[in-house]
Amino acid sequence: MASEAVRPCVAVVMGVSGSGKTTVANILAADLGWPMLEGDDLHPAANIAKMASGHPLTDADRWPWLESIGQWISGRVETGGSAVVTCSALKRSYRDVLRQAMIGHPEALLLFVYLRGTPEELHRRLVARRDHYMHASMLESQLATLEDPTGEPDVRTIDVGHSPKEVAAAALAAIEAANAE
Image (cartoon, rainbow, N blue to C red; front, side, top):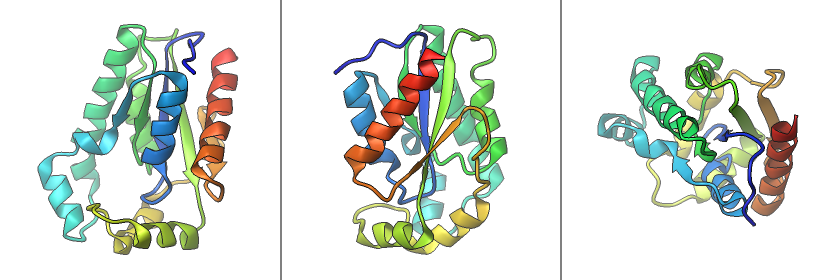
């Protein structure tokens, strides 16, 4: 069911690896009828190779990637469009880069949907995942880097301990409520 946003809206589905960002974002995009950007697709090859070899990214590795996502978001809202984007957005400074994409677009809404899970649940999911460059061994570094966004006014936190459809339904309700404010 497509949903017309009251105003242009970009929902950034965020969290550490294994939280279900891509799965939830795909469900949301389908339910809303909005395009979806898999943020990982904008990583340079060097970043992917680094993660695939088990090395965490540094801030210097992430800045160009985050700026690319921000440019994509800005382009979306410039045309009056809404979208769903996946991005780990682990630190507040990373989220701030994405927030800067909204400068000059006061009519648009940027909402972070933080998928939060226990370390045990996230590890279990990563171990079960196949054909992905992000290995379970990297979870600890992501959790150490994560600055919990709970309390930031443009963040809605959703527990991932439910089915993907239930998590997506909670995210959809949060997006619709924020867009109606």
